[in-house]
Image (tube, rainbow, N blue to C red; front, top):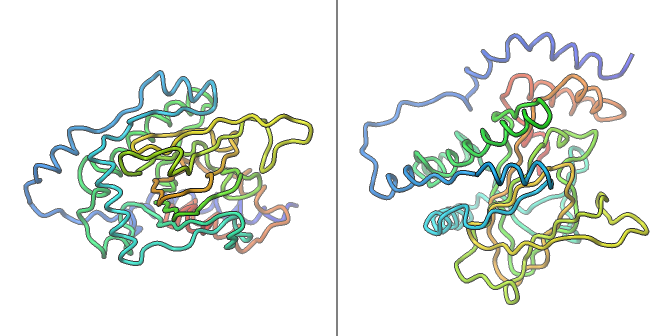
Length: 314
């Protein structure tokens, strides 16, 4: 019998309670909103929600990635970057780590950056204010939910598997001058990150970003390798300038990538749109792994109360 069989049984036993748990979880409690009229800027946000096109989705499906210039209007880019600066001033950012699950660690030879995890109703963010560009009607979370819905339709078309919005992972990434992130993959077999279907990068840099003077390009590797280029294979990559408003989407398991050294402060939203967990995922995680962690993963995913982000701890 596999070591993870008890975990699979746990999922099956509590699966019928998942819907109830989702509704009673603090993450899913909706507080009544005060009857306050929206400001002019809020109305502008609500009426100008960016949308991904069918042509963009087709490109993502066929090539494994798509780069969309000016996805986010300049005024929203500036507002979201201001949100990052405000959260950093409030101490909400932490030094970014690398690795998956129990191997998650700080390694400044591979990554120099700071991150702040996002999500609706995160207590540590709500205490800093409930009317940010993220939370307001038509704001960042609404834009990303719409994007998730479009990608879920694509996932159903390509693999007959929808996305699970409750498992989305979102964070702000801040790279100081001299920051970088060496080549890596977003979805690692036999780890919680295997649920990641599509990776998202939305750049929030100031207007006038110079590829030569500011640098910090995203490099997507297309050589078929993993964390390194395969022996005997010629390097094959494309570089994307992190211009404010640019959206990059790619298949998480297919595109190794890196952030080249930055010469200026670099701002981005990073995210992963995840598929639902299956019993086979838990079985694979349990093979030779940390069973305490696997058990946490099973409960978190079955009850939708903790989520992948907490278990990964990136």
